[in-house]
Length: 169
Image 1 (tube, one colour):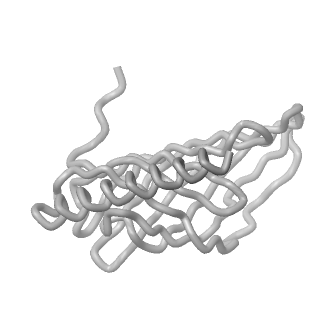
Image 2 (cartoon, helix red, strand yellow):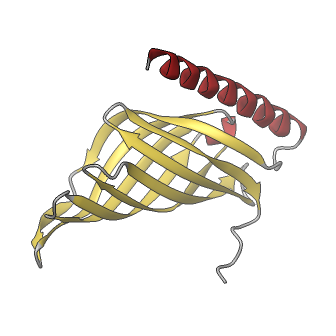
Image 3 (cartoon, rainbow, N blue to C red):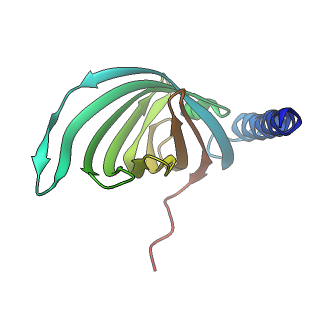
C-alpha cells in the first residue's frame, strides 16, 4: 500500500510539473492561448450565513458564501475567490446535497465569474463542475474546472480556452 501511495504521489507531481510547464509556455507566448490547468483551493473562510431551514422534507440553504484562495498551475487562475451556494440536502442514507453555485475569482490582471453545480454527500465524493468567463485581461476566455473537495480543502483540474463552451446539442 505504501508503494502504491508513493507511485500515485510521484505521478501527480510529474503531471502537475508537466501541466505547469505547458501552462507557463502557453501564457508566455500568447495570453489568450488555451492551456490545461491544475489547482488548489486554499484557506477557506466563512463569508456569509445565508438562509437555511427545512422545506418539503429537505434542508434548504440559500446564499451561504465562503472565501478561498486559488493557487493554479496557470497564473491566470490564481486569485481570491468567493463561492456562493444554494443547496437541497436530502435526509436519505447516505445523505446527499445537490447545489447550484456561483464563483467569482479576482486577481490584479482580471477575473473570472460563472456558475457551478455540485453533488456532495457521505460516500459520494464531493465534486463540482464550474464554467467561468474571463474579464479584464482574460476577456474572451473561458475556464472549465472540475473540483474535488475533502476535509483538507479542494483541488481542481480543467482548461482555459478562448471563446465559449460549445452549444448544447
